[in-house]
Length: 231
Image (cartoon, rainbow, N blue to C red):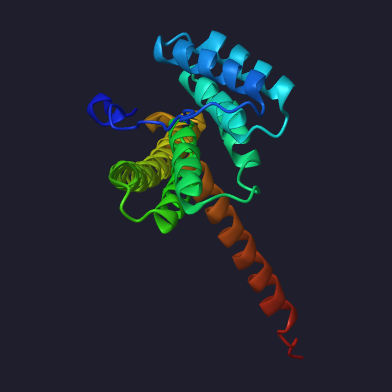
């Protein structure tokens, strides 16, 4: 969000007519009306008058420039940028170029396009290095850019922290689930009483004894068969 103290310095240039000639007199009349309405902050009506001037002289640079001003004051920053940018291809004096790029910078700045506004202010200063208004606006745009970069870096760090926390939480949840599964498996294993255990052991012992007795009997039979009968 823009600092309101700085916003007061974001002034915009408007072209005024210093003299009236017979040539294109109707066009200039509408520009004068537009300027008076602009000064009264009736920006929508001033735009209408400037467009009437364009109807009288489609090549009127002053009328086209001031339409951009009126759009800017109506907070139609995208339209204002387009209006000013269309004039940048014209053959202009350095002073007019400086004012044009100053206004392009302002429109870009208000539209949150910080890098574009910085570039426009620098272009304005190339044509008029002594323009203090443009210097102020450039410094402000660069300050906003620095703040935005710092905020982006902070947001990225926070995002990384959140990702690490999510991974840690997932691992903890997995460990808890593994422990729960292990406990469930232990609970599902059949339990045996002390008496049943003793009977089982006794049965195993009896089976072992029977097996041993059987082996002894088989050995005895085998030994008896090998005895040679004496005559």
